[in-house]
Length: 611
Image (cartoon, rainbow, N blue to C red; front, side, top):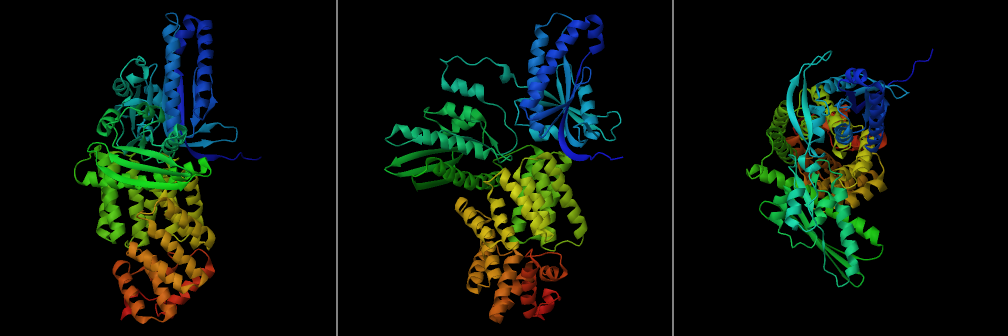
């Protein structure tokens, strides 16, 4: 007998049931069945519209599965709005009210599409806790979708539910009042419309992109400016760690003589991007300014001047340059504001941002105590809120840096924590490039560059504007010996984000390519640039040590061995043990190890080589 293949997967599960179904059937069976058929049609349409799949509609219940929690909650809100309207219009005693539960968790899926497991069971328990006509979700769902759907989440506390070992923290989902408010009259002042549009935004950096001003004499260039703004909004939305005001809202500010502080206050956003487009002959100049909404402080500004050839290609190129450069500036500004006490988030998010700051300092300056602090703060944030995505990201990054720098006596424990963090992050944010980047870095520190490259390619497919992904793609392509691809990614990343803090990874990729090809002059120059930008990164020092060994430059050799000994004394021995691989291909890694042996390093600790 052939056993059907079972697929384990993460999914958002929606379970629904009619409140008081037996009583309704007893009262008027025909009317109840007619209303149930109408409700099933609503479920089928709304689930499919949110990229979900109806798994079962047995009796008065519905089971559906979604790729994302946002899709599941959006479908649940739309379903309840429509079915409750039908119920309100129904004859007394014939109104169907559904309870809906939504959970994000593991399921087991059979080839026929049926699903089982704790994820389904918890969703069913949440459904029973919902009010008739209402929605109940788990903390995992609330953490992912808050700020992405037009609803509020009322904490119902931890609930002990049948056949589930741990209590489940439950939230009642309420559609925002603005969702059902009448549309303002056309004669209303723009400011009134904007007040109607304003909502309370989540604890993450938020931005509105205002329509760019057309400064050209040619009024037809308006379409170019509008198209660029729409593309910027779309590409910014790929960064799930940002909250981006939708195009329909931002374009209500067109030709209104915007006061930046007022716009930020009306929409409750942290940042405002404004800009202009000017065309003269066959050249187009685009200017963009990123402004901190509370103070009006200019955080970042850039000007792009290009020859107009293919309009859409030009629009795409400038859009990506704007978005890629700006996201890093937004996150850096958030850290500065948080440090100065001028920005506050919820307690868990505030702690997570401080953890991120500690990690960045520790990684940039080779400070183990700061990496330890980042891990401590990330654990605090997670203890306060399990669904804090940023905290899981920092926790994994901290342990990965411990492994990479050989700063841990419990390599297996750090690896296990990093893997767990990556798994949770993938569950919380399955469509975020950062989730795949985190998984790639695990393979990277283990020397599995081919695996890291595969994850990075997935991350790039999700968000082609994530500069960090592009710079590491360049490095991993070089590690795999794909020299042309590595150089292409390094050049692309530099063009998109020329002032990026990870720019040195592009320099490193170029140095690795030069080592593979045996171009010692290029190896020296690119390794020197990489070290200058990030002196605490061990691979950079190793490549310079290899250059010095090949050139017989004993002074340069000892200088860089000394520096490496100060920041990561066990790094070169880890290469000989096979704990880490600079290059994925055996022939390239053997070439590097042979060069290091020629410098007298061999299998001894770096300190031993200096004595």
